[in-house]
Length: 279
Length: 183
Image 1 (cartoon, rainbow over the protein chains, first blue to last red):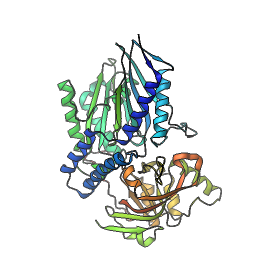
Image 2: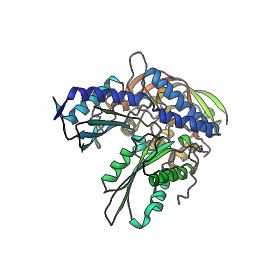
Image 3: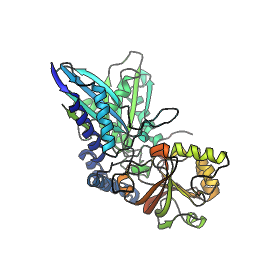
């Protein structure tokens, strides 16, 4: 059995938290540039210009791209043949996250749901753990902001509603959310599974690069179709109108009960911040 | 679409020349407050106590900044979503607050209060926190320090870039989506 020291995990997580929050992905930047070429209205162009300047400034100054540096969400694939030495894996992830948020001057946004008292160190991290064959360890980190998370929804559709019902729900959700989640948004969809699995799939789908193509051509076509329809809503950057409402639609499917069609829509703001590391 | 340079505290005259879509570069002192601070401010008002800053002519910025790194007055500082403060905004406008700064839609009560009280709702670019922080020259916690990022801060800004989203005449910058959402 392979062994990995917890300190390696702590260090890697600390670095990921800081990098994801201060360096905009080149795939997102490219989409801003595409939008700037496409948009004609002064407001839409000005917003996209500011977002590009913001990304440059964050890179230079190491200030976070957005003050909402999110709750820290991790998707972890742990090989069955790997043992973490010198501490638990989840604690190591939390320790690395706390250090990253402290050293990177990132905002601590975690609080008690009712008293609203801040936990003070952004803990606990939300850790989704999956056991996989082999002896590797893959950790993906996402800084998920509250504004876009608040606009996300889970619903249980009737099977008869099918793809058309899924599209109608998503279009309505994006239209109702309007300017609130900081468009242009990215949409992660979880289709199928159970009541709790669908949103997990939706969130994990947001880890994909914006410029990737789903390996299943049928799903890739659905993603492209929905993206085009969402962009026809005309909401535009920050809701001021325009052609750039959505930068990408990423869909994950799972088999579901014969009675159900679970659907989760995880809305991601344009400040899509995620990183991953293989240890 | 016009461009204006304005100075806080804001006056009726300042507000009445603004229309949805105008660009405003705001300078002077503005005050940060989010959900938790609004609750505390309103509770203080209920008890007959003074608010933590003068409301007359005030501009409230819906922001919870990231911590300030060494050598900087403040960390990343972009707007948070405004609807969560809708419950408090009309009362504060009636007490003299002239502007709020945030992102996202306001409800009908807030839009009515803007008309009744000659006030304005500005949008700042969400997710541009690093950029916006460059226009904040000083920042000091003036109340509710225990709230951490949600504490009330007095911030000195110069040419803080804003768009008029809702004006005092019922005008709105946000577009209606191309989808029938019913009533």
